[in-house]
Length: 405
Ligand code: PLP
Image (tube, rainbow, N blue to C red):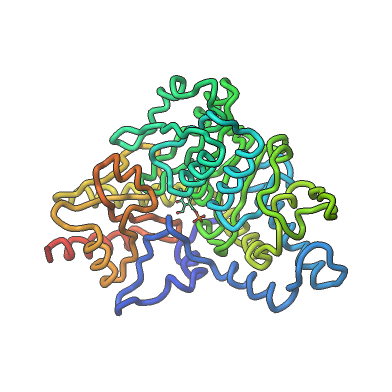
């Protein structure tokens, strides 16, 4: 598909509106993206044409819903090049995917005194689940540090991995710095020492072509709402031999094979990890989001977003007192910054009045904030539907806001 920005923007009804009488500029895509009409239509179609509870049922509606739900599993499998559809587990988001692994992997493989390596730049959802697991299993968390440019010090990894290291948890792309981490290298280093790796791909799958087999990732987690799909839907990919050895994360309907008070046997993959009625319509509409992304093509997405990133970075750097956090060459479309003398919260609130939606605060990455000795930043994050003209509106508004202080 050729990339025609005006047609693309027509697909996103929410973008075509005025806020406070100014055109909306949506630069909060790392928090959540907006949905194209195709995804909205898929949701509506599900509820108006073929909604029923999936699996088990013998009637037409449930059957159609089951087929559409399972079709999304195949689309997700192809999107990240997973070996089989059974290795795609639907969750309610990257957070739940990581919690699932921290719990079930912990139960299967962690002993007292074992270690988990977690990077300093992680989102809280790739730190706290491991802390909970470490408390339960009396395990220890070891931090993989980064430098002031936002680069992980992977040369320290060989020394950080010990005989007790079982798993490394690391983000593919930082939600604060935009750094694209060398996850393939990390996985290679880990595997030579018999250590597993979970990649938090929440900020990567919407922007980069992911191939879990090429990466040789043991686990890969992501969320639909950051990739133009519904919220309340996520994916966990896992290596089959690991998922098979891991106990269920939650008990309930669907995840069982047989239940009696004498004992219960569990369903096969992926259903063992999908207890209860899932977000049926959300998963089905997620299929439409995957189609949408793939129609544009992730190479095009990356190219368009990188151009906007470069342009916005150059424009921001012209502003006096500007400090950008995360200056790696291999970077996704995220810029976190502060302006000397102005609180990030004031900047964000005032930018909103100019119609510019940005995020302010710690971005759920307190250890990263501690590294830089700051409380928070302003963050702008781009999607393929953003334009250089929007960057101009943002820069113009930012300059006006700064002058007010
Ligand atoms: N990991 C990263 C890097 C994120 O940016 C986020 C959300 O911002 C998450 C995990 C959590 O994703 P969710 O809230 O969709 O579960």
